[in-house]
Image (cartoon, rainbow, N blue to C red; front, side, top):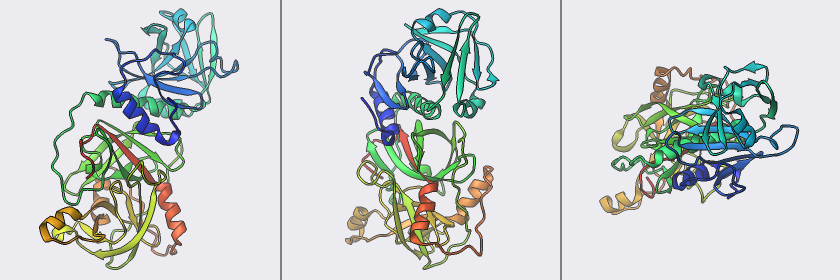
Length: 411
């Protein structure tokens, strides 16, 4: 099954949850994701390991993969290892090998057999994964042989195999029971065990801010921003249930610093604002949607002073997205909308476009308490055109995919 890059997370997670096992190098069966010569599939279940593998398919003699296909293994316990497949891998079992990434030599390792013709060369150091993903060449050598491989596409493959392994771990987890909330209906469910929301970058190291309810009950989380070829695995660094905020950190730091928006602490009634998010994922534009409106009230539901009301259209999947002013400065975080069906039952009237966001004055202290140095707004920054604001938001926003979430249609 060939999967396009735009559907990496959904395909990897959904297929990994349902897959039972597959042969390590079957020609096409069991492939969950494929790009730049890389193929991700589940590992054959065994007592010693369970997870996923990313194998670089044979391409040319130049990178030696025609002789000994190689790749990565991610197991459900969070470990990432280097692996080889085929007769060449079998010949290295029990022998000391040296692995070099560009000009950096990893600790010596002794390959071990994992299953059939699949050999684990050695576990990769977790703190050096970004360095490994950014490398150009990988060299594996023994006393009698040496093979050199191109690292093209390794970053996306590492992210995909890590997310796939997390999804398999999530498959056995029971979704926690969580009560519904009137103003938390903007997390879009894409399947009975998957959901989508929005987040945005708040640090150069790739930290992402979103709503706590977007990642509530998730056993595996992936993010994908504009220009990304695949999803990046993230974890919840911190959460604030009271204000419905969560801070996500990447498992592997980004090679290039992401686009980070500046923040403004105050909000003004009637000011023009813009939002960006990923509503109704799988039905609307996968690249995200841009909307504009006004700040309609300086309080949220039941006079909640931590929120404000906005008129920009908000739909399921917009949760966690940025709200910015005319200069592109963040003034809030989308949190939800008034549940129209609940209001019809309660008041006999259908509310129109009543949406809410968390004020920046409450989001900033949360981030600062967890080590995020928030970029301050420029007082004299010029007003931006609609297209310029949209481009700035698109560069910073990310789609947040959750595996192992609530078994509901939307919230």
